[in-house]
Length: 405
Image 1 (tube, rainbow, N blue to C red):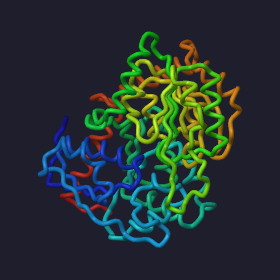
Image 2: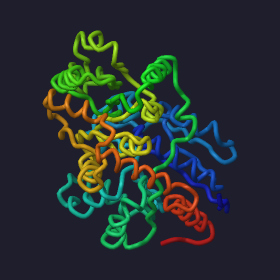
Image 3: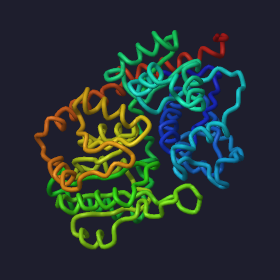
Image 4: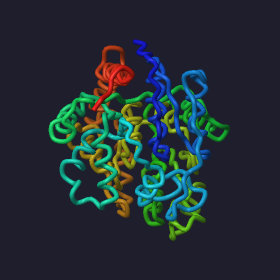
């Protein structure tokens, strides 16, 4: 790996959401491996997200700048991470953290160019002013970095260059591999889950993984539909249920994300319900897992693709719809099962989809295997994303010797 050390010091400021912090830490790791110095600005309650990265690099190359979370009238006291609120708080978090310093900045986009090109080319003028300012700030950055790879994003990257940025400082550097510590931090409860998966290995790809990320909470009716589908399908499964957001005056419906009474007892022989955090990377990478019912957030989609599991897409908000269109309609590597934040799926239909998703000769599964190989090749030495990372770091290194306008 080329060492580009040239006295360059990079300040990284992650947006306070785990779906942003984790991939930024993975990007920081790659930049550090290439010889640059990095300082990461973080608030006290988000500092623990950096532990794995800090354990891998010396304090001479990696430092932290821990600052208190700025107060904001709309953000509940004590909240420092988006996982504790709903997506409507994005502008408030951005307002609390943003300051115009006149320093050239690189915008790290945690989704793909397909999603943002649609927003930026088609939807900017119709966005609420707060969101429009956020997106314009990203477009006007000195450079853009995407957690994606050229083989699926090249045309949209060209579109962004030609119609929006008018410069070529755009790099697709993904899929960014998780640093080692993120895979090994498994507690006793999570260890039991992995042991349960080991007991399912008599038939590979026989388990359905169900999880909707750190931001989504399901209504009582949605929870009942998912539970009914899992029960009716007779598949083995792991269902991760996010802890409800209570006590913050944000979600009025106390029935959100509540597992229906008696469900866990009825399916105890073939299913596991995890309430709270789960070792998703380790679960998806286990040979017993065959499909993944997901909201299709880009981080989760990439993790599923990299694990070679079949994605069952239920897009709900933000980039989910664009990701689903890319994966289902353009690449044919996923199956759309439902759509909408408040939509309640038909339980019997979902049950048939879940059981059918473990069929090995599904064309979507075959195409997923090919896409996984493409993704793996892109991050190997000489691959498109590997070269893009080198190009990014080389450009950053050159800033110590000249001013960029």
